[in-house]
Length: 304
Image (tube, rainbow, N blue to C red; front, top):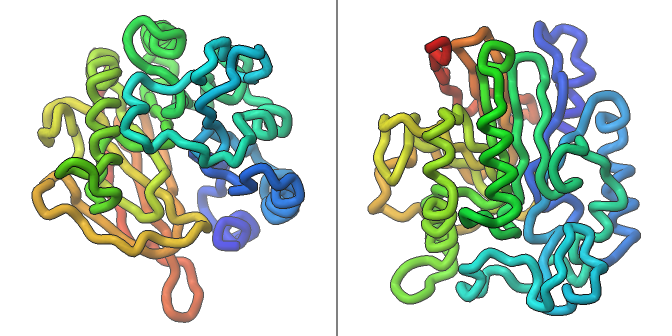
């Protein structure tokens, strides 16, 4: 409703040009009628402007049966196309048996990668890359090699801004799922950093947007290998679009979190020019009016 209201507001100086939903879409978990209800819910804006999606754990997961060749992402191994660190047991059966089939049949994304699972596109001065955190991203994997080629081919004179979207975040600080002295979800983020964080800094990615956690987190700018202001992207997690909010707390030992909120809302990105981008987290006040709860200017110069 908040997005619909902003889209309908004729007094907005800069109207919404596209909507990006970074995984965990309908939460149908195998119930087709929930997909139908969800599409009816989003029809008011999805029928007017582009809706770009990324797959999450509630769209794609399976631990057996991939050898039958029916996996829409191209899996041919019996254990699925999971990351090598799936032993952490956070890659289970969250899709309820959907295994990526409904999302791949209901959405069509740019055909330059692997369907809805990984792809990229240009919009004005922004090159956006969607990758799957539910698939292997280790060097040598199909997705890693594709991502590296895509990043290498970006023309920064045409698209000075590069944004990577991935359902699971590389950095987060929610205290959740305790496992062996550290949260298993944090271990997933750490493993993801081992997989492909070096690519982000090599090709000077500006933003890394995620979901998964049902809260809002903005990390310090330039985050790389756990240190702020070291040339990495601006990492932001927005998982507050509809599912039940997290009822957890922040890990106190991480100093990279600059803003954390457990309230409904969505992110809004406005590109001012080739060197300045304005990020906002939009929530609502006690009267139901939309209000900016967090904002930050990302400034880059990719001309050299």
